[in-house]
Image (cartoon, rainbow, N blue to C red; front, side, top):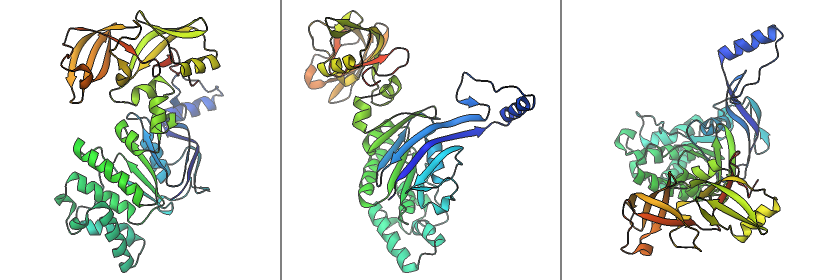
Length: 398
């Protein structure tokens, strides 16, 4: 259990050719050139840029984002497997930039399990304790406790090849927790499992978190894992933090269109529209329909003295209504109808854009919209999102 502080962390992978050109320009007295792509500098490729995060004791933090956004690189810098180009990493108030990985009291679970195939499960679990020269009696106690927590006691005498993917991942987690590290890092540990096993292992990790006293940092590209596991979520894109917040905060109050589109399944629908101000209240105009935002949204827009402008309108599939609201309706043509059991996912073509609407089957009864039929819909005024068309920022939380 530990606190972690990452302050202005930057990771740059040097580019030999770029470095050579920089040295040549310096020798010739030429000023450095600015580049349009801020992720490529004269030093090389910027993988993580100005990363700032405070992690509380025993907190479960999830890094989430698309492939290549820098989340695993950040995790590896915390573990000491990657050097930090700039910035400071503190664990329990002690600067760790130059501390060897073995001296950080950190355990890490990798995506590919990384088990020793010639060892039994027990031997795999004992290995980190053997390196620390833990007495045999204490070692047996810790291994048995870890195996009990993860439900792998019956597999202790098997080798990894005799285990399923889910069982191997439990062993990998067991090897990480057996020495009771103060920080547990997990790098996409469930990505090699099928959907059913992933669901089971998510539940196991939640239970595990309640039984051990470590601080967790978990990396994934799966936003479902992020929403179900994390106390807070760090959403990354192109090496930069886009938003930090609880699962509910990032879902209900996305700060920009990237976060809004990345969090939520199916993803948020986006439309071109315009924000107008009429009779001291704001009105959204979209595809011929006029929608009046709720009172709390009106208040936030007024507080910022938001001007009339072209905007991007966001509405989650579950927040779109097929019920008439004062005639403020948009017309959509059904392209695809997906029966999901308790709900139907309708793919509508509205103004040339695909829109997904989630409708409870109880609400429709037997009147399922057929492919090709015209369906009128509108947005719930209390959950519609308004983004600046140029910057992509949420107008309510600028």
